[in-house]
Image (tube, rainbow, N blue to C red; front, side, top):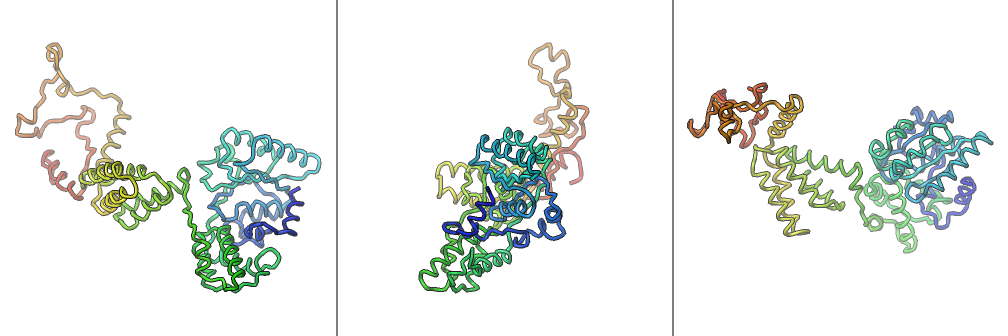
Length: 438
């Protein structure tokens, strides 16, 4: 049935978006993704040999995942069966599997099952698909914008090759746009519209590597230009691309990539990059309270005692936001972000507690030294609780020879202040207290 519909689409383009009309039908027509489908690449060789494995195509929107799946089916002997993990249900999937089994049994023809947005499948659905992939009833091609190691369960992932598609570069987008403008059968060639080089470059630059977005903008602008009898200009395509959407999924990999860039920019003392990544999060719809929480954590984890004011600033920014809300709360957030990115850094306190935790887990519940134990009763005093304890207040403010760790850990050092900010003073003071050289 898919061949019949494909033929209908080829002969009647009415109402079909340009991106679908211009969809490549062979590997030779595909643009970009040379690292996956180049002549000497594994997948290209497998397609030519008609020995395609089950696979997961992972990449941003508009990079050709669906197109590549269709090309694979077209250039091999496979029957293409599309299925949407969002719109399709289990009954429909069972029918596809039944058709695939019959097709293999009676005609010896394989079935390429294309599951769009496979990350939307729950674990039970993925498990139900697994035996049919294992038996070769279907060759699975899953498409996802999410990191497959997060989105696809391990059993299914182990039986599929993962191919990562990258955002198309500007040269590839330009090639697609020019092909569409010159194609009189499926493209915009019949419009015979004049297009400036600047206009094409604007689309290529602003489409963010998304072929579907680029072709959609070209189609809208070209029809507008043809109707008005004007050349397709930079201003017109800029208007067609005016509705900008950020590539960002608050539960997906890109979310964590942006958060990581935000944290690393503050850690690297780059307030310009830090404020940029913070605004990327907020403009994409992230909860400001999440961003504030990350800054509070950062103030202790990455700044610490090098600048104790950092934690106060982060807490104050959080309190200010709770009182002001948006957009006024953004002033406090920006102040905190730029301060944290600009101030001195130390992770000494972070390293101290992680090292201490490691010893706690390794050594278990080491006994508290008798001298440090509380002795609220006469019996406990008689048993020696508290014996030998030297009170710092009674000895001029500190007891240089006293120890406080369990006996097995005596002399262990967890906190090592750095030569950074206020920790320079703490480092010198602790050296004096410990009788060490500063």
